Amino acid sequence: MIKKLYALSKFETNIVLSDKAIFLFTLLFPTVYFLFNAFTANSVHSVRNFYDVIPGFWTYMVLVGVINQITSAIVTMRENNFLKMFTFIAGDKRLIYYANLIPQIFIMQAEILIFDVVAALVYRVDPAVIEFMALTWLANFLIIPIVSFFTSLILLAPVKVQTMGALMTGYIFLGLALAYISTGSFALNTVLAAINPGNFIIRAYILMIPGVSHHVSYLVMLAVVAVVYTIVSNVVISRMSLNSSTSRA
Image (cartoon, rainbow, N blue to C red; front, side):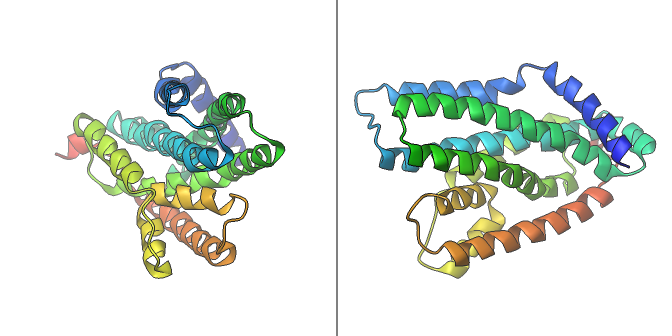
């Protein structure tokens, strides 16, 4: 199984790196937008402003990267009947999913690292902020796959290639628009983190900001949500249809 996963991951990596367009939405757009805002007359390059602004960019990069490079890729493979072919070769649909997920994690981490270098230079961050950036970057090795497990539920929907773009765009928009919503109720905040990957990402980043309270309760909540989605996602992936929605129509 490990040999199959390695071979499939290597194959997926070559395919991904051959398409430079993936860097357009997950790296170029957020970096250009960040630089535009950073050098406007009203921009403030304080530590507090960094903690308020930068997690939102990270959330965008993770959510858009997962949707475009992982979830949409699996849907496209299914619609082109490649998923059926690769599953026949590998013997398990989960191997195909993880073979796509693993290289994408490292690609997204490379993109985020480049963005972090730019942000650090613009804000001229101190050692405490660099430590925070390093901590969140390492945490992304867990956050990215968890978010991919969130969005794997989309694989159950009979999504056609023609409508996939609109669905994914709406999903990203809602996820980002509702990401910063927070209430005084721990139970309601748990529900928000459980149904919105954007909210889950932001809350995870906020927990790593120095001086933030409620570390234990919210850390446990995020851990429980992550475990639930990991279990549910593997069930979803193992049971998703291999037939394209177009051929089933």
